[in-house]
Length: 110
Length: 118
Image 1 (cartoon, one colour):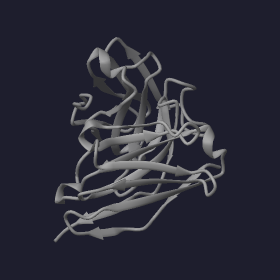
Image 2: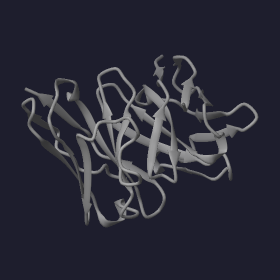
Image 3: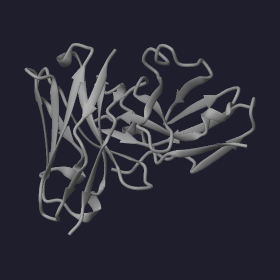
Image 4: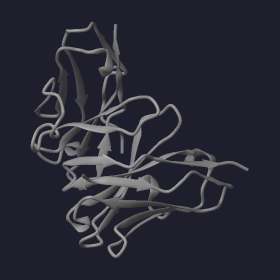
């Protein structure tokens, strides 16, 4: 199964907003709530930052928000901070109850 | 607070098997699923499969079918992933992660580095 398509890299300056897209086929998205997003710093395990079920985990900044329409999901990070520099992955359960990740997007905070 | 602690690094020869454990604490074990994900050096996340401790249902990615076995032990709140017939391309960090109805996955274990080398 092919990965969901994400841009390889995005960048932004502190205080700006950026958006990461995540595109797949109709079978890649099992439902309106199928997409979640993960942040991974170098050498660390990934961390859930947004889910369409219940939004963001408790204690996490509201600077992370998600949106999905059709076969495209997106993650927006507002008010960029240096510590946001990391890799970001989208994830979705499919119509056959498998799971697929995006290829990952490297965020650089300039 | 939910936490997953994985077993330590492994070095295996091609053709061997590896079994990674993932001990859960801080929540009701069989109320959530487990997912296994791996990450080869410098690469992205690759889904391997999931298991429900409550029903023992499993589903694995096509690339691993026939080579991977996922199990859980509700007596010790531990999940296991065994990968057989290892090859050099299986060198990666293997993660377990708690899942809720496949809709979100959190927390992640710290990862287990498996190195396959002759």
